[in-house]
Each structure stands twice: as structure tokens, then as C-alpha cells.
Image 1 (spheres, one colour):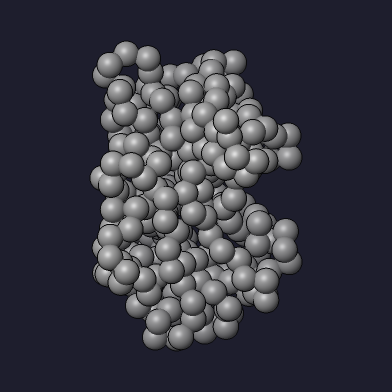
Image 2 (cartoon, rainbow, N blue to C red):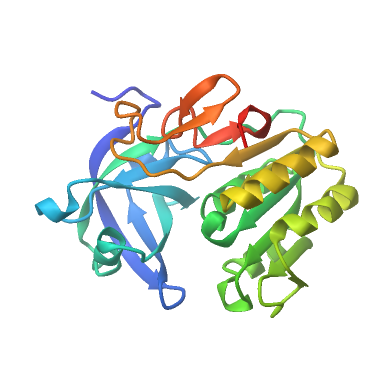
Length: 261
């Protein structure tokens, strides 16, 4: 049995797999049960393959939800499980559980927001940005990547809001450095009501510190190795001001001030 707004385990039909680069791809899936329940920041737990080599599921942020009861996952090939998923063909079915976890909170009074995405941390931020725009919230976006070739969805963010700040490690586009370097500028330009961030741990710590300095609420989406994905095994616990918290249940989104950086 599944609660009306809770997660479900189901067979999901793969609609397409599109390569964005040598090791990154977008998987589009049809599943009304997950698409209609999903909120920005939540994730799905995917069974990768049928043999014992894939005994553990892999968690992926819900990248986008479309109007046709479909959703997308943005995936980087880094191991057996993700390499298997990159070979899945349209019309195949995958066993998934979702949507899982605690997503981003959008306070009702929010009028302006800064969204920070570092590397593949852009995965949940596209869903969030589209929800913010749908609520008529002014968007200031900071995106960072190793190079301009890895600035996924740069033009999509530009279409959603003209204020996009770019950083690349190799200086091939925008600021030469880290996305967190540009957060003070985005905050000063936008005077946002809230800051949202997803990316490497060091970047999140820097963004949290910056938001604290400007006294602006900040929410961060954490990444952690997960086994069960439903809070039973405690393998994904992170340290917070309230003690250990499960990234798969209490997170992956937390108020930045709760995290013991």
C-alpha cells in the first residue's frame, strides 16, 4: 500500500536516454505515480540491473517533471550501476522507489531567490528553478563547472531569468574559480529572501557561510552514499546541531544552519 502523497515502488517506463557529454546523460521516464507526487529536491531509488552485481539501488535527484506525467534524471557514469543505466533503451522498464526524502521548502512570502548549482549539483536545481518561476519568484542563478563544456542547462537558466552568474575552474567561461565565489555578488544584486544550493560539500559550506554572513536563510541539498534509501540502515547519516540525521529521510535538503560543517 502507498500513502496518497508518499513514495511508491513501481516499474517505470524509460522514454529516452540523451547524452549530454562523454559521461553525462538525461533519462526521461514515464510514471504518473512518481511525477505527480514529486517535489523539488526529492529523489528516486533505482534498481540497476537484475543480477547480484547490482544488489543495491542508486539514488538520483529528480531533475525535472514534465506536464505529460514524466520526469527526468540527470546522471553521470561513475560505476557499474550508472554505466548500466546509460545502456538502457527506450520502452525498457526500471524498478524505482520514489519520490523519497525531504525536498526544498519555498516560503509563501518568497519574492526573490538565489539558486546555486555546482557541477552535477544542477540536477535537482532545474526542478526547483522551474517551480520558483511558476510561483513568479525572481531568480538569481549561480552555476559552476570544471569547464564551459560542463555548464549543463546554462541557456535554460538564462531563459528563466536574466541574472545568471557563471564560474568555471579552467576560466573557459565566466569567473575563473568556484561558484561560491560569486554568491556574495548574487546576494548583493538580488537581496533574496532565501538561498538554495546543491553541489560539492566544500561549496555548500562556503555558500552556507556566505548566507549566514548576510543573514539570509539557506537550504542545502546534501549528497551521501545510501544503501536502503528509506532510513533503516543509517548509512547516510550526517552530523547536525540536533545529532545525526538521515540524508535519505530528514534530507537530502536541510537548513544550512543545522549542518555541522
